[in-house]
Amino acid sequence: MVSGAVRSADGAPGAPLLAMRGVQVTLRSAPILRGVNLQLARGEVLLLAGRNGAGKTTLLRTAAGLLAPEAGELRLCGESLPSLPRREIARRVAYVPQQAAFAFPWSLLEVALMGRTPHLGRFGFETPRDLALARESLARLGIADLAGRSILEVSGGERQLAAIARALAQQAPLLLLDEPGAHLDLAHRHALHQLLRQLTAEGRSVLWVTHDLGPALSCADRVALLAEGRVLAAGAPAEVLRPDLLRAAFGVDARLIHSEAGPLLQLPR
Amino acid sequence: MTPLTPGRLARSTAWLLALLVLALGAGVLLGPALSPAEAWDALRLASPDAAALDILWRVRLPRVGLAALVGASLAVAGALFQALLRNPLADPFILGVSGGAALGGVALLVLGPALGVGAGAVPPASFAGAGLALLALLAIAGPQGRLSPAALLLTGVVLNAFASAAIVFCASFSGLVEGGRIFLWLIGSITEVRADVAIWVAVFLALGLACALPLARALNLLALGEESAAALGIETRRIKLLLLVSTSLMVGASVAVAGLVGFVGLIVPHLLRLLLGPDHRQLLPAAALGGAAFLVICDTAVRTLPAGRELPVGALTALAGGPFFLWLLRRSARRNWSALPW
Image (cartoon, rainbow over all chains, first blue to last red; front, side, top):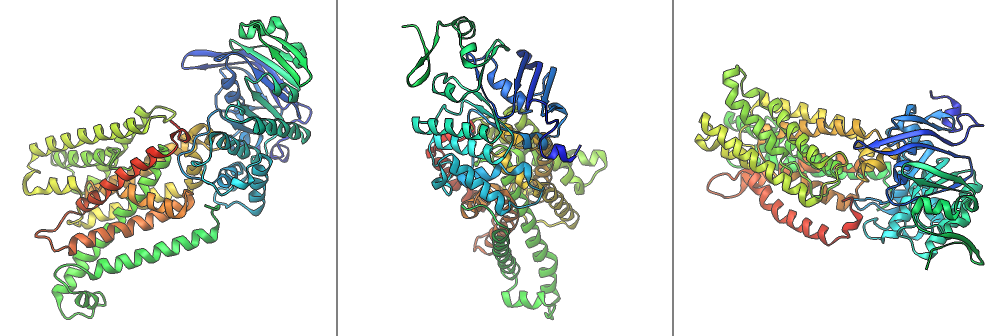
């Protein structure tokens, strides 16, 4: 299992980074995912949208290996994800949950450093390289100057950025973000969009759950609409965000327009 | 706090080791019946007085050693509970785990004669009691451990009240109430030192530490929530099971010899976290050394206080710990609660 190919997180080079086929997940005896088909290529940003309770977070948690599918096929770099060891999954997938939880006064640098865990030996200390990667991650999210501050004393948005920095330091080819913009101000949201584009240029992929179907579209390669535990449609934003599909997914009449400021979803007055 | 380095870990360990040596020295030299000079002579085996040798080697040294073992166990268990439950207010005594251990011990004392087991089997019985209480707590907290701090503390209050009632109930049937022994146990005291039981404590503490220390970095992540820890490659279920066993071992052993000494697991890890930061790779060894020093100092204090009768050490730790707990509660309530995982 510990072959060179696995360690470099390449798996089968030609395979898509993440492939779900007929994935079913049940939580507390309620079916949440009812046969999801979804693929994510390397270097791609896929935006996952759908109404509240459609199963978006469950899909992310499944892709992070935190929930085991009852049926269907879930492959990461061409290998069956449920049969990979936890640590190996953590080297390939970084997951940022919706709500970052902290009970102790870690500094932001220490939080980012936690992302190095899957790469460290059991008793080993972080090396200067790990430290440099953690600092770089904080810098890329624009919070390098907060490195020494306690996570309990910074704002909710800064806490969210620190959680994303932790995921970046993990250096996984797949990044799962659950509404990362929820606590972010305009400037930080914009910076995040730019960061995601840089990441895809580096060959990393992002599966991104968001309700922000406006500005976020400008950095998405594809959009997938999730409704009642199934992928309704997936493809280029213009193909997927059609009035009929939007109506089916959200139950409102909305339409995608291309304004000077970029793509926008227009709701009925 | 800057990230932990091996150098910083070595420095903090050396300082706390020095503190422990000082505390042990004070504990051995100070106390009733022997002046410090007499105690020093007896320690070097240079005393002509056979009674002094006896007091020092048979009474004082074992007692100081036991105080150190119990203090270390309780402080480490407290630090582990705080990480496991993501609650800085957690402590074996407050959560009722010590109460469960005491109930296990008393149940054995009551039923033991009928089963043909002696008092030497109290530590395993306390271990079982602690484990059951902790299992109950985790079951109530749910799989995600998302219990509000208030609900968690209330659960502890109820577990404690139930355990105390059951202990008194058992004891009143078996004559343990006489002579105040049960009272000493409920308040926590290290007056009786039995060699057979002391060995158990040392073994349980060693086992508990051996389980817990390799988990230190995983504990750092577990404090972020189980999902985040799992997403970073931590086998959370295995780690929770190991924590359950190791904390039950340590709490069970210390309750078996010293009864319900409270708040050590709250005060010591918290002060150390303020001084050293939250990294468990440093906090756990520091809690072991600091907890040992703390309880040795407290026990020395109750032995040397000019009271009419010797104060149980648990009364002193509770006297210090009660106000400390309230201060912590107020402090964390003023903090930004939204940063916390409930």
